[in-house]
Image (cartoon, rainbow, N blue to C red):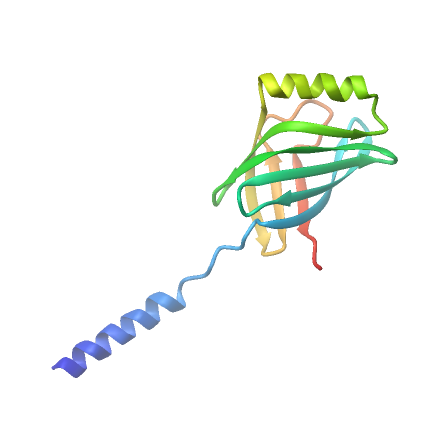
Length: 142
C-alpha cells in the first residue's frame, strides 16, 4: 500500500509539473518603433528587476530618456514616469517637464500581449490622437 501511495504521488507531481510553463520575464532591454504625428520614433525600453523603468526615444538627433517605475501582470502593464532627460531639446522644456512630473508623475496604462518570449505587443489604453496605440517590442539580445 505505501508503494501505491508513493506511485500515485509521483504521477501527480509529474502531471502537474509538466503542465506548468514558466512565464517569460519582462526584465531586460526591449526595442521597437512608435509612429506619432507622421514620424517614426525609435525606442529602447529597459525593465529593471526592481520595478524601475527607462525609456529612450529618438527621432534623428533629437530625443530623450524618461525614467520611472512599472507594474505588470499577465495582460496589463503600467508605466509611471517621474523624470526626463533631453538631447537636442531646449533645457527650459526639459526643466518644465520635470517640474510637472515632480508635482504629478505621468501614469500610462497598456494592455500586454506576449507573442513569444522575446516579443510583446503593448497597446496604450488612451493613446492621444495621431499616435500609434500599439507598439511591438522585441527583446534585445547580448
